[in-house]
Amino acid sequence: MVGRKIQKTEDDFIREAMHELPYGIYVIGTTRGGKPNGMIADWVMQISFEPRLVVAAFERDSSSLGRIRDHGYYTVNLLPQKDGLLIAQRFVQPSNAAKVRGRSDEAAAQQHDKLAGIDYRLSERAPGCPILEDAVAYLECAADQFIEAGDHVLVTARVLYGEVQQSGDPLTSTFTGWSYSG
Ligand SMILES: Cc1cc2nc3c(=O)[nH]c(=O)nc-3n(C[C@H](O)[C@H](O)[C@H](O)COP(=O)(O)O)c2cc1C
Image (cartoon, rainbow, N blue to C red; front, side, top):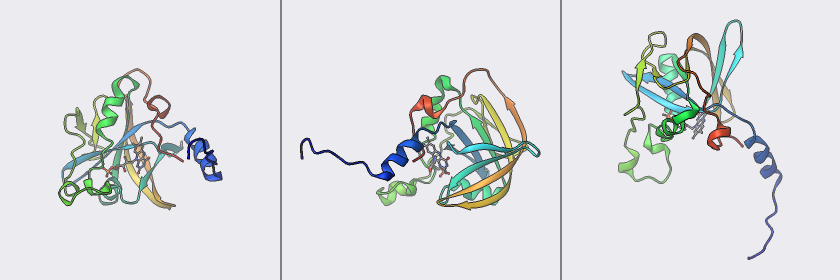
């Protein structure tokens, strides 16, 4: 096998091109039953000025999507480039451990508290959804439409309020090198 040339497929070329799309690194805050949660997400953007609307794309089986369907609100936290990678790493695990294939029943039954050890407060406008104290900026959002889009669900939302909490560059996929695309 040594020296054998691996032929790239058309799909490989498309994936490589899509990996070049730059994204912000966000923590989407949700809540249910008094338990706040944070989910790391790349696919978030503004889609209207008047009214101010954003959209976030959720995997169909993300627990965050279920919380938003039940509760109707989410926060968007924009992580800082400085030290934001350490925060982001805390949110990479799914809250429902069963989502990671190949885990034992015992490991899969665990609920991972991604907010443990993170400084946050609970939003009033997006009731109970977490706002990270270290976020460069945050948005408090009320879910509007749920739109099926391939293997994700787009959740459009009205921006109820937002604030910049600190100066400094936001964390982006260009900085982390992480890829959620392709
Ligand atoms: C860098 C990065 C970006 C991600 N972007 C998204 C995204 O935009 N939408 C999404 O549904 N999942 C995204 N994910 C995957 C979710 O964070 C992951 O499925 C998580 O387990 C869902 O958390 P939850 O079960 O607490 O909702 C991303 C993961 C990483 C590492």
